Image 1 (cartoon, helix red, strand yellow):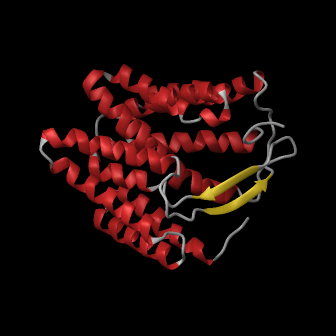
Image 2 (cartoon, rainbow, N blue to C red; image 1 turned 30 degrees about the vertical axis):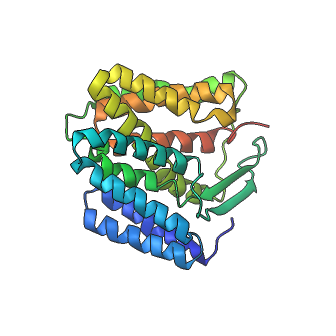
Amino acid sequence: MILDTSMWIWLPLSLAIIFAFIDKTRLSIALVIISLIGGLIENRLNIIGFITLLAGLAIAYKTPSLERKWQLGSYLFILLWCVILFLHLLPGFGNAKVLDSVIAGPQSIPFTMYLNLDKPFIFFGLLLAYPAILGSKAAFNYKAVLFTAIPLFGLLPIAWQLGALQPEFTIPYWWWLFSLNNLLLTCTAEEAFFRGFVQQSLSKRFGWIVGVAAASLLFGIAHFNGGLLLVSFATLAGVGYGLIYHYSSRLWVTVLFHFLFNLAHLLFFTYPIMK
């Protein structure tokens, strides 16, 4: 692991995400500000990145109160802003490489991981522009969620049968860092975008089946760097996450299952793929 003193800036950022989920808005905002200022101090964020983040967040904050004729353009801007953050194309960020070509197990290929400072702001931007991403207090269909989870986790042994993975029980020494990063920074941002924003907004207009299908396909395409097989499996996993979001009506549930799927992959199979 590659850790240095600048790592502290991800602590208030992670806490800000947790407090946002439990509706402690002011505390969450204060922690975000601490993280941003810390990023400047620790040279993990320069003034260009700082200004572009604040501009995006400011537009996101104003979006819900805009007249309808201006909202569409604002949402399109937020969508583009999120995609740029997702692809790490916004200048001014010094994301931290904390794992460099580590091996989860003897049959796994080398794995590199970053603590991203840009991608987590997808969650905050969408939360300001589209607060409904967190879901609602509608009835939680526990049975449907559990029945959806079975084929979702079944994708891992199917990948094994297709030759993409191999069973390999390992607990790498860096599992805890992987878990914190994956749960709070990666899964939260991805689920906020694909399920909370894309799926939910399309579902309200065209029905939940279209919403789930479209968000799942986009989620699969987002994994194009891994090849066609990964795109296919990511799309199917996206269907599982989308159904869990639909049946639970709560973003945190989807984030949790997304994380548990990734953790099961790490602990019980070659990660990210076999040699």
